[in-house]
Each structure stands twice: as structure tokens, then as C-alpha cells.
Amino acid sequence: MTAPHSSPRPPSALTIAGSDSGGGAGIQADLKTFAAHRVHGLSAIAALTAQHTRGVSAVHVPDTGFLRAQIDACFDDFDVRAVKLGMLATAEVIVAVADALEHYRPQYTVLDPVMVATSGARLLEPSALHALRTRLLPLASVITPNLPEAELLLGASIADRDAMHRAIDGLFALGAHAVLLKGGHLPGDGDVVDLFAQPGSVREIAHPRLQVDAHGTGCTLASAVAANLCLGRSLQEASVAAADYVHDALLLGYRPGRSEVLVLDHFGAAPRA
Image 1 (cartoon, rainbow, N blue to C red):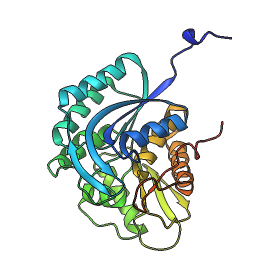
Image 2: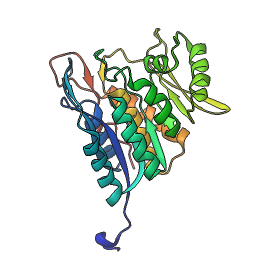
Image 3: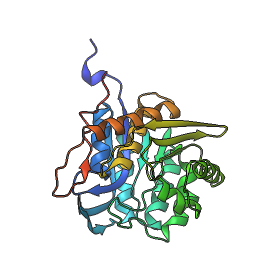
């Protein structure tokens, strides 16, 4: 048996995102997701939020020098195989993160273009949208927008499945390399259909619609994609597995706060070895 201290370093996933004091989304959800997939989780906190299941009451953005110091520390000591990007509130933060990614060139980068919280609170300054489009989107291996986020990126409404397909073409035109477009915001009682697309191919990922109000699904999906990439899966395999994981975590979800908002059960949904 190989001694633990001489074993090769396991792959790590790094989340660069915002902290959720309520524990249901953001960095906290990301680290739970990494752990559930048995991937070592690292974090660089790009924003601090005062929030719970009923909303966001305050946001503090640390200076970009400290953010870069966190990122440098992670790359200095760990085998960072995948980076997941979440809440990056300002253009300055986005530029700092893009500079770090261009320096370190991780194998995979998963971009969750967080713009609006489930509660409706705006989490991205309007001036940062251009920086996200031009600096981060082209660096991402895959982006995971929901429909409102895709609408903001494209400046066009997405009202049906056909419009989702057109939106994917628009996101490729912006420089995306692969897209996991989440369809949960489309109205209707049928299945929720997400679209995973790479140039020349589109795959539908369908799950029964759950009539719940949930918190942290977008963060969890993107971090599950990153975790599965660390485990050696392809972009498509990682995206399908991540969507399955989120669905299972929703089925097992619970309500820790005073609202009816559901928080995902990450470890109940953990993939079995």
C-alpha cells in the first residue's frame, strides 16, 4: 500500500464566487458539491453577502488584490483541474479574475454568469456585463446561464424552446465554446429541458418539473460540472451528470429557514462510487 504522504496529489476544483451567509448557495453550495463528488474543494471569495432564504440584505466586495492573493495561493499548492466562476459583482473583479485565468490557464473553467439572485436581488453591476461578455466568456470551457441570464447576455428575450436554440447560436457568436442553457424558467407543466451544446451538436437533458421554490441550484449545477470534469468526464458527460445531481438534490431538499425556499441536500444526492 502506498503511504498517504507519497500519494500523488488528487485533482482539486476551485470556486471563485460569493459567500452566502445562509449556506444554501454560492461558495458554501460549491464546496458541498465538490465534497459530495469526492473532489478536493478550494475557494477564493469574490464577494461577501448577508443573506438567508428570504433575500440579500447586504453585499461587500473585497479588494481585488486580496482576491488575487487567494487565487495565487490555491494555484501555488494544489493541482487545480477545474475552476468554477460564480458571483463576480464588479467589472474590476471580473478583470482581476480574467487576468488570473489567463496567467494560470486551468484545464477547465465553468462560468455561471450570476446576475440576479433567486430572490430578485441584482448581484452584478450593469457596468460589469460588458467585462463578463468580453473577458470571461471567451475563457470559459462551458457557460451555464439560466434564461434570464442568457437574455441579459444577448439583449433578447427567450420565450420558448425554439428561442433557446437561437440563444445558443447567439452565445456561440459571443465567443462561448460550450453552453449548458437551463430551461427551468420556461412556463409550463411538462419536463424541464436544459440544452447542452457544442458547435455542431445540441443535446436535450430532461427532468420532471418539481413544483418547489429552491435556492442554490445554479451554483450547484456549475460546481457539479466542474467536479465531474475533475473526475475525467467529458464536457457533455459532466453536464448530464451535473443536471442529474441537481435534480436528485432537489428531490431530497429541505427548508432550514423560515421561508418556503428549499435548500438542496448535497450529500443525500452524492453519486455512489
